[in-house]
Image (cartoon, rainbow, N blue to C red):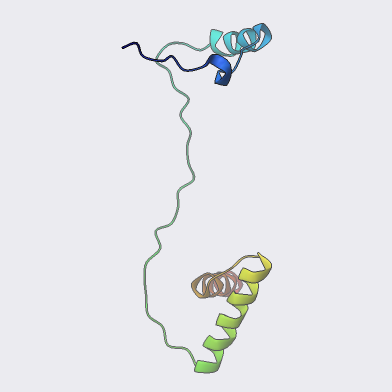
Length: 92
């Protein structure tokens, strides 16, 4: 029994201009050399425990919920506290 070949209609047709553009882009690139992309160093987040007054925590939780619903940052309690601490440390 012969296998049925897939239809060619789902293949993308590459134009001659696209092929030339790809060839030009790759022409000056030596073999084996890859561009090294340096990613910014991310700080490692460390867990800690703090004690806050209940009213303060509720206000921060309400603010986080408002930020989530409106799509603005910071969207979590810990992110709000990080922003506040960063601002305080820059001021000191």
